[in-house]
Picture 1 (cartoon, rainbow, N blue to C red):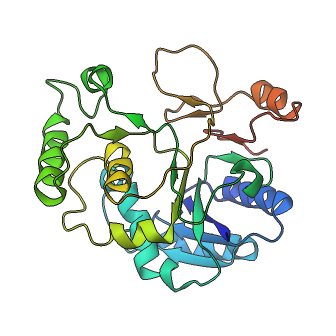
Picture 2: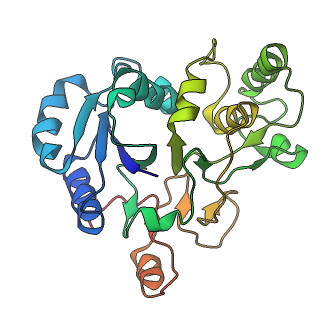
Length: 261
């Protein structure tokens, strides 16, 4: 399988350069495709600063959307990259989505041992059970986001005859194969639902096989244990990263980390 990196960024050019230098150090032969989703006026500056580390640079078609929309609909920005650019790049079977505030301190392919060509990976994927539904921001009873969740359930029941429990995830680290992108493009109403339950559930509907590996995802904000991946603005401490690097089988991917490494 040919694995490539999709580097997703929109700010902090110096941090982005640092991240790409590290990725290149550990992955000298991997293809790195970038898509930029920040201020259109700054895109030329970013392209000039980063292009030497990249195999392709794409400015998202969705760049003019409000920041709030882009945060909630990051999946549609990734899909836009595939539809407008990625599908015409021939040197990959799957892409690992690496965000600008993620540290990748090792060989990417080795982080996904034995992953197969058409498998999908979405960090923290699990069944959206009653316990999660009651407490999760995107689904909880009486919450502002619940109507969107119920609308998505109705949509997939009507269009795909899907009435099982949904899957959910924390959208931090992902591997998307071409086959998933192609099936994803066929969804008529792509904005309904929130990406952290929408994407894994659609993958299940499309019968895309899931690759499973524990990358240490922090699911609940009340948990006190330090983990390498969290979806909040809780920076991973350098001391924790160093401790993992000292272990032969320690974690090598960390999010978020906002400083240069």
